[in-house]
Length: 557
Image 1 (cartoon, rainbow, N blue to C red):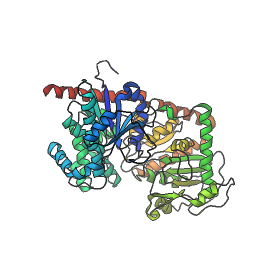
Image 2 (cartoon, rainbow, N blue to C red):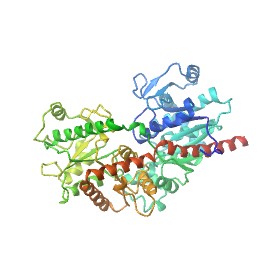
Image 3 (tube, helix red, strand yellow):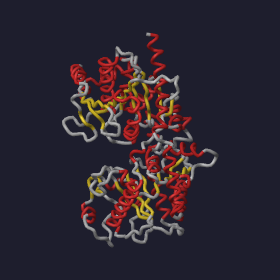
Image 4 (cartoon, rainbow, N blue to C red):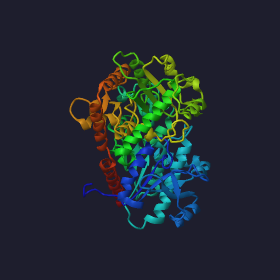
């Protein structure tokens, strides 16, 4: 950090995913916490929703000895909190707040946000109310804690809010505690995600879209409004990649003050003999599940291919991944068997009992189970996008098919009933990963992949893919030999992307062990450039911007 930067002495950070593992933002916060805590110690406080009141939250350790006087004072103010530690590397301080008492006052809260900042909540539905009441409660927590501990000590305080779900809290702090510098980070705009998810061309027409008008058309007015107004009124507005910064400029009518790229911590990656052992265990488990489902034995040179992430069929490129798998099966040049795993949580109804029974035995199977491509039972199975695509391709994992597909429609949390291994312990067994995203503000899954020495294929529409190209430099995109294949993707080249994936898999299949080892090293080396110790500087850039604006504001009061 440069010496002339204004550095915070205290940071609050609020997210729906604090002690609440839902998606990629959890990974952002939980992997970064250790690096930030090394610099701030217990002057870093995360604020999350208390869904587990009265029950044990495995991600949270309550500490009744932490700030007991303030907890009592907050309760007297109508703010019900539990305080303790987040069970992640660094074990940072965390406040979990019960937001349910504020529902009775939500109309008044929305009215105040409209009067002060033009936030339109009139067309709210679904999860908007729940997220907004948490956001408001988080703002109240910051105000109460600041007044109790910090207001008289001339601290340089930052409050960072993540995604539209925390916008209301950022605006509350902006109004009620003007001395606190506010930072708002949108990881993906609600309207951009909606445009892409509704099969409208996002990129070629980005310049022509009006965010407000599109939010009405796609029925996301309330989320768009809180996101847009928060971006305009906070001290520092940020996002996570250059591709999303452009999206924010066009759809939110607001330029980002800083880009906070998502880093990673190498602590999650095993080393040495432990790495090799974990990889062997993962491959053994993946191929064992494949055998139990399909009744086919898989040799040691089987290529294990995988995609994973949130179940956004088009946005995450699951559709084009399946298209590529279908085309790969027809390639005469494919000389090695391939098992392709799709690991995205769907509306799961529990593990398949027949598969569990097979896995409980030590034997190898030569006959397939019914639906030999599905590891867990699904609700509403007739309307599942992955299964419908497999039906359209007449894909049923017949013995003569060289490429088998296995759909794992659950969170790999170590307790899924089939793998019973955490995601990273499964990921390490892959040979190659594919994340053919159409809409991907950053892309943690490809970063995780290369961190575990697994080369991956992604696209130029992902923030991570753009970064990989930038790291390589020059006019040519990053290739599989560099550790990351970045395939050019546009609104209209779906089949070209599928063919590009096929070409890369065929190339990988021809490599000898020495080449594979070299490429795996290249992948891991690239991931080291994205460690939090490198990327944390961007956060301090944002803090500096916000703190300068807050200082200027207070000087005028």
